Image (cartoon, rainbow, N blue to C red; front, side, top):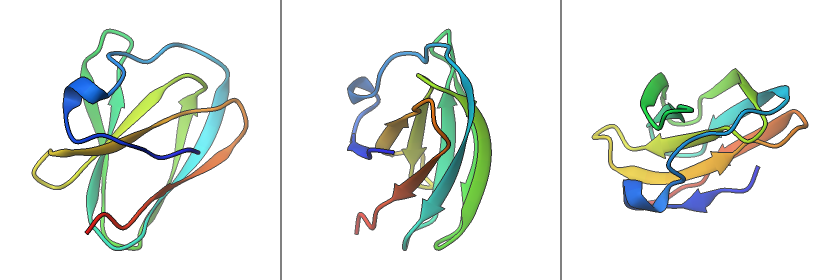
Length: 94
């Protein structure tokens, strides 16, 4: 999936849209992060905290938005899910 850098919540789409059921493999490179799903009503729901180098397979739907933050909840960027199973690599941001 395409990584979109975002340093403020206002830079992230306000809500997810519904689509086709799929899977994502989230992968961090060098930093611990938190994964938040941006809900259909705009609410954030934390799904995981990943250590540096860790991966997580996650069920999702196309057109869903996943916000990635640092451990202090500062936005780093987001992914928009596609219809096909995808890999979402969270780059080294340091």
